[in-house]
Length: 81
Image (cartoon, rainbow, N blue to C red; front, side, top):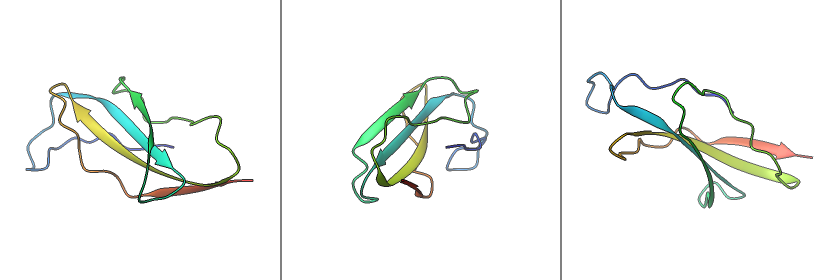
C-alpha cells in the first residue's frame, strides 16, 4: 500500500501533530478486523505480508500525538492468487 501524508485537519487548519498511520485490513470491506500501526510519519508505503489467498480489503487512517484518528481512506482491494 502507499498513501500521501495528510497536511490539513478536518476543519482545514494545518496539521502539526501527525504521529503515524494505521492500516486496517480484512476479508470483508465492512469488517476490517486486522491492523498494523506505523509510528513513523515519514513512512508512506507498507507491504502487508503473510496474507492467505483470496481477496483482501484495506484502508489507511492517520493519527495525531493526542490519539485522534482520521476518517479512513477509500477502501483498496487486492486479490492474492
